[in-house]
Amino acid sequence: MPFSHPYTLYISGSLAYDRIMDFPGKFSDHILPDKIHILNVCFTVNGMMEKFGGTAGNIAYNLALLEETPLILGSAGKDFDRYEAWLKQNHIPTEAIRIIPEEFTAGAYITTDQSDNQITGFNPGAMKHACEYSVTIAEGQRAIGIISPGCVDDMRGYSRRFKALHIPYICDPGQQIPVLGKDALTEMITGAGILISNDYELEMIQNATGLTQALLREKTGALITTLGEQGSLVWDGAAETRIPAVPAERVLDPTGAGDAYRAGLIKGLVMENPLRKAAEMGATCASYAVACHGTQEHRFDLADFWKRHERQFGKAE
Image 1 (spheres, rainbow, N blue to C red):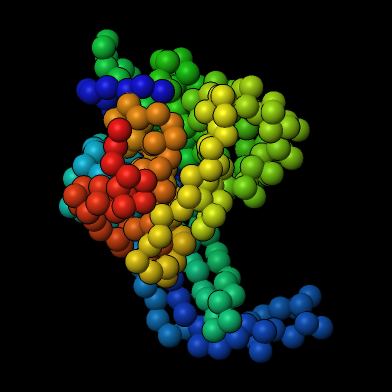
Image 2: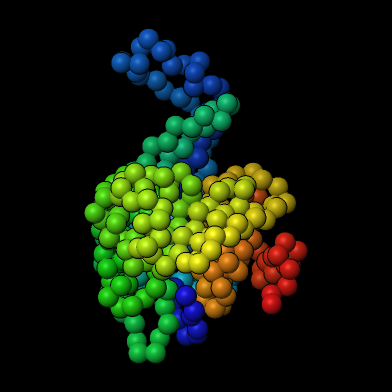
């Protein structure tokens, strides 16, 4: 998938506030197994932290750290002002984001107890509404897209639009696999430049579509499977290569590492690297995300990125 400047990076996906709460006890001490049918429990938390998140926001943030200017295709609500200011502070355009004034921005409410058990409530809010931004491409312009989990109408609609405009795109169905269903999922995968998922999601994709891994490979240009601390597997149409994970300075929170990986991968592709090399850049980018609590809390500059990257994979050929 070669790309050269000038190009546009279209990032379709969700924008969300992650509201994280800490419960100073164990859920199991307050839930009576024999009373589950009339469950009525209140957990008083120590406080709440609000973090910026969502797949499109996370990918765009990491691309901005890699000195790219991605265009987010997503919807947000009447409370988006703080997030919008954050995006602008990080030089990320917001003109393609649709504001739904009667809705709140999507929000995940995550409560964690002392045993690291979690109870999460998710309000899709504005994410229920399609972005409706009209993707176009001028003659001679280069572009790449990614379809990450978000509004289902956007996921299906933008995959069709990218194919119609001959814009190569990465299909990343993730958490929306159960919602998409067989037909929509198969349609999105067919013709994608890359299908990316973790190993659990890959099995879910196979179950949802009824397609074997061999058949999935026939429908897409390449297949990438992330394996957490075990790295990732990259199939480029000819051979499968294992990419090792890049050691982080510390591991505090794996949430957001997958989105960071995707950003590094996209950066590698627009640099016209082979897929294996682009995936190595994804692994390097992911190593920064796991070192912080929250998906947009880490920072690095390109000099630091390349230093860490070369320490793991050697200098670019």
